[in-house]
Amino acid sequence: MDTGDTTWMLISCAIVLFMFVPGLALFYGGMVSERNVISTMMYSLSSLLIVSVVWVLWGYTLAFGPDAGGWIGSLDYLGYSGVGQEAMAPLTIPHIIFSIFQLLFAGITVALISGAVAERVRLSAWVVFSVLWITFVYAPMAHWTWGGGWLSKLGGLDFAGGTVVHILSGVSALVAAMMIGRRKGFTNKTVPPHNVILFFIGGMSLWFGWFGFNGGSALASGGLATIAYATTHVAGAAGGIAWAAIEWARKKKPTLVGTVTGVIAGLVAITPGAGFVSVTSSLVIGFVASFVCYFGVNYLKTKFKYDDTLDVFGIHGLGGIWGAIATGIFASKEVNPAGNDGLIHGNANQVVIQLIDVLVAIVLAAVGTYLLLKIVSLFVPLRVEKDQEEVGLDISLHGELAYNSASVFAEVYASSAPPVVEKTPVNAPLPSNT
Image 1 (tube, one colour):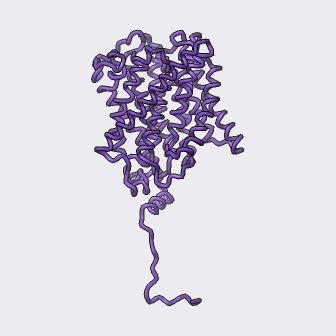
Image 2 (cartoon, rainbow, N blue to C red):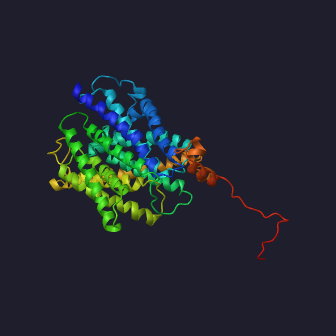
Image 3 (cartoon, rainbow, N blue to C red):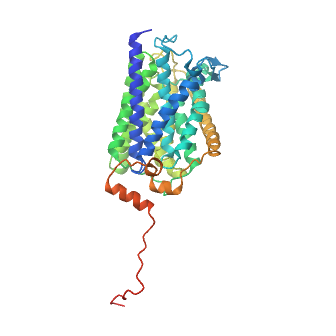
C-alpha cells in the first residue's frame, strides 16, 4: 500500500462529494423555478443517501465483486464483507477507499437523471426508482466496463464514466422525461435559470470536482492522474469557448449560462478519454462537444418536443456519446500504455469497439429505465398532482421555500388560491354614464 496514492484517493473522494452535494444540487437548483429549488436539491441529496446504503449492502458486490461469467459480480462483497483496509491488488490503495470512490460515481449518476424530471416527479417514486436503477442498470454496466465484465474484455475504453455515467444517465433521463410527461405550461423553449448565481456556483463546483472525478480515476497519484487533470481542464475551457462563440455568432450576445453549459459539455465529453488522450486532443474533444450538445439542446429538443427539464440528455447523453467515440479516435498508448491506440494512431477497430460500448449503454439505459418506471408506477404514481405542480413542489411536498420573501409568498399564494370574482351588490346604484 502506498500512502501517497491513498492520500490522493482520499482527497479525490472529498472533491467528488463536493462536486455532487452541493455542486450538482446548486447547479440544478439554480435552473428550475424558484418554487422548486428545495425539491430539486432534495433529489440530489436523496440520491446520495440512498445509493450509499444500497452500495454497501449489495450494489458494490454486483458491480465490482469477482466476475461471474462476464455479466455480473459475485456476492463475495455482500454487505461490504471483505472490503477493508488492505490494499486491493494490483492497486496500491485500501480496498475500502476504492469502493467509496465508486459509490460517489454511482450516486451522482442517479442524481443526474433527476434533472430531466424535475418540477413534476413524485419524491416517493424517485426513491424507489433510485434503488432499482442502481441495482439493475448501473451495477451491470459498471461491472461490464470496469469490473472485469465482457465489455472490458472486448477492449472498450472508458476512463472515468463516458458510458457508465453520462450515457446511462442521459438516455435514462430522456426515457423518464417522456414517460412522466411534460410539465404543466411547457413551452418547448429553454427557460432561463431563475437564479444565475446559484447556477454559476454550482457549475464551477462541478468543474472543480471533475478534477477528482477524472484525476482520481487514475487510482494513484502518478503521471496518469496529471494527464487526466490537464485534459479535463483544457477540454472544459475549449467547450466554454465554443458555446460562447456559437451564441456570439447566432445571437450577438454570449451568455454566462451558455458559456458555463459549454464548459460542462466539454467536461462530459473528455470523461471517457481523460487518461487515454493527449492534451492537444482534449482541445478538439471539448470544442466539438459544445457543437454536439448545442444541437441537442436547441434543435433536437425543439424538433421532438420532449420536456427534458434541465437538458440532461442534450448535455450528458449526447456529450457522453461523442466523448466515447472520440476516445476511439484519439486514444494513444503513448499517453497510457494500459489503453490502446485509436483511429488517428492507426487502429480504426477501436472506434468500432467504442460504438459497441455506446450502443450497449443506450439499450441498457432505455430498456432498463422504461421497465423499472413501469414497475414503480404499479405501486406509486410517478407524477405529483396538478395542484401540487401549480403551487410548486417545495411547499407542497416539503413545506419549505427557498426564498422567504414577500414576493415569493405572494406568487405561491396566487398560484394556489382560487380566483377572486368581485360581485356587484343587488342594490348598488348603476354607473352614472348608463
